[in-house]
Structure formats: C-alpha cells, structure tokens
Image 1: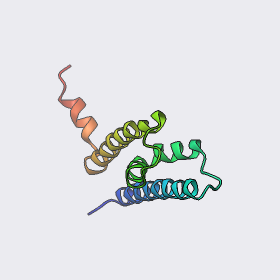
Image 2 (image 1 turned 90 degrees about the horizontal axis):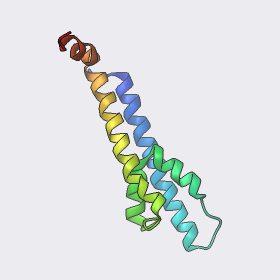
Image 3 (image 1 turned 135 degrees about the vertical axis):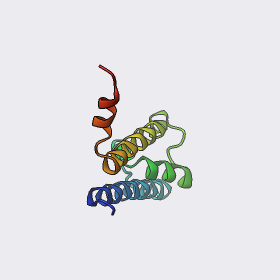
Length: 106
C-alpha cells in the first residue's frame, strides 16, 4: 500500500514544478508584450523548489537560458532528485539506516 506521506510528497513536488513552469511562461509572455516582469529573485526561488518545471519552462519558452545564474537550475534539479530518492527510500524502507549501521562491524 502506498504511504500517505509518499502521496503528499509527490503532490507537493508536482505542484511546485507546475508553478515554476507557469511562472517562466508568464515572464516570457510579459517580456514579449513589454509588460512588468516577474523578478529574477522570484524565478530563482521557484527554480530552487521546482527545478523540473523551471528547466522545462526555460527550454520550452527559450527563456533565461543564457543567464549564468539560471544555469544553476540544473544543480537544483540534481539536488531535488537526490533528496526525492532519499525520501522515497526512507518511505519504502524506513529501517534502512539502522539496518546499514547494524551490519557495520564494530
């Protein structure tokens, strides 16, 4: 049976990435229409919490792809993948750490 924590984790990751994707889309549209833009700080924070969406938005809308600080999105993406996998392992196998420590000779 799937844990409620796992469902909440997946939903949160999905929603944060969707928000990030839509924020990049919104900023691109505003840039094309010469309107007030989304701040770079807000885009970077969204990229930190939703790097999959940010990366997809950057590629799909060809937006912020040349700026060095937005190339950090790939780093955020790698960090989120590692954290997500660790959380997934903990949810699936909660005794993993104690099992690993008990198998180490003293």
